[in-house]
Length: 349
Image (tube, rainbow, N blue to C red; front, side, top):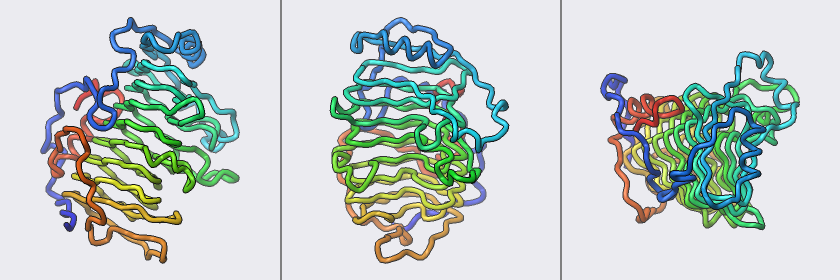
């Protein structure tokens, strides 16, 4: 099916902001409850948050309300950030946790969820301009010998970096926005606003990450603007990508590789290069394309190992997702996502 081209007459005013508030994840991460009804503990610094995680028994339920504020204006040289030590909240082998940013909060540290960590929510956080270069993802999910994270909900966060090309760092000035690897499964990534990022979402760390064949991830109602690539970069596994808004993507958008399959439906692509592609791996991936809208699309000339979705045709039927969901009509996606994605929207949907 060919993509429907976005008409210039569609304006933001065509869609009122929804009043519904996110209560539970939809998609492969359905059933994630985090810390549930546990009494929230207020923390205002990375060290206080880490201390609370370290003291937690790992299963009874923990809710952390982050109130800290970081003044991003104090970073006068973004190219100095990658040379500094990474600052990261570590959640390893502990489960039933909610990390929730308070209204107006902001952070200059990342969040790493690893090992046998399940039933985790990260919500309403603003994370930007991290220290540490390749050692610092804004949010990362990683399987380890101790176990594989499962039932993860990353929702209504604002994540940003810089597209500045820093001498000596290249595209490693800042690392991933929301990355996952080594078999992480049952994940929903929804209503996030990610902008000014070189490498947004890794899903499978290398062509040898065969554990990622079990990965199942839903990306929906996210807003991606001023991006270079990885929306996501998927190796192996299954992804369901629907109702996302992509604007100004320089290199490539959804890159499905190593036999991975992706259901890509009712998204909006504006001024995007190579919006759906399979490249840079030893084996291609596959997609099922349904009712996407595009304008200002460009394609490069593929080499023998690259497949581009230039005719917007499905290359492999995805089949059933195995869960229920409601698709926003593609013509309404842009306005809805702009009105609801990111931190500070009262978790609106």
